Length: 113
Length: 109
Image 1 (spheres, rainbow over the protein chains, first blue to last red):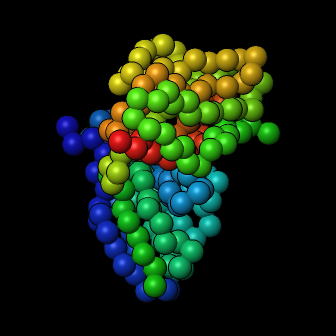
Image 2: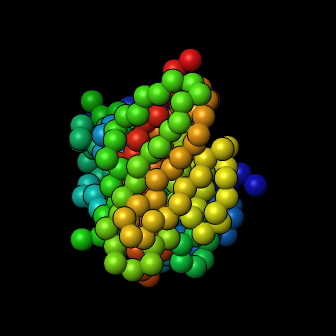
């Protein structure tokens, strides 16, 4: 099993461009989430999903969209990139039930110029 | 408000010294607490969870409900322990944990 796979690993964008960060998991996990990791700020939840067709906002959702059309995939869309969105983005998944451990991807390092 | 606090951004120790990474939480219910570790340029991975009461890589963590803490401890630090450590808490009825801001541990030779 590959676990949680994120693509791309690195990306440089210009301000105003849009892009989609891909996240796929092969563990049949119900729950998936996106975090951004910034120095001194730790991990902050952007959006999450508790199943196909169900998404909700986390702590810092502005400027990002998500959808969950299948159990396996949970893409994160930047609508109009801004320098403040320069960060490392992590996707995570976990199994059904409360308090399940998170499985993380390798991360996407995104720079907005 | 429900909160997870890691008061130290950086903890620097010498090899062989004891280590304690602090985690405090604010929650009136029964918490479910985890520690995650991220080695340089790697993905986050689960280190331990309080209900398992395990010792992983020499680390232990005890839930202290009276002090609302879940500190991570190791009696003798090793250089390979240098990493970022995150405390995470599930509040009642939640599927997604709340993470603290992380503590960077540096173990000097």
